[in-house]
Figure (cartoon, rainbow, N blue to C red):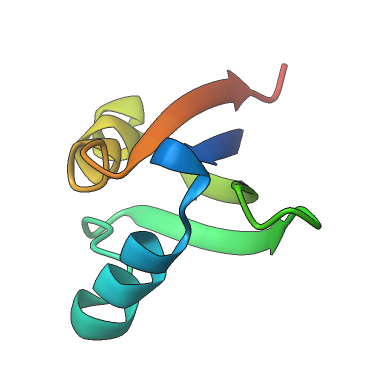
Amino acid sequence: MSLYMVIENFKNGDAAPVYRRFRDRGRLAPEGLSYISSWVNDQLDRCYQLMETEDRALLDRWIANWSDLVDFEVHPRL
């Protein structure tokens, strides 16, 4: 398994649309991609998530579900 630090920068600094979609549709993660933990900064414009998967393509599929609302940075654990 590979661990990834995912930094989510909410577009326009607006977390509301992200949390609305999460409430309505869930995490939208494909089978085989596991959520480990997350936290949001004090300004509520950035979220840090730890995700785990054997297949990096699954992470990219998950990102595609959110890329209209979030700009992503992905950092694999080395």
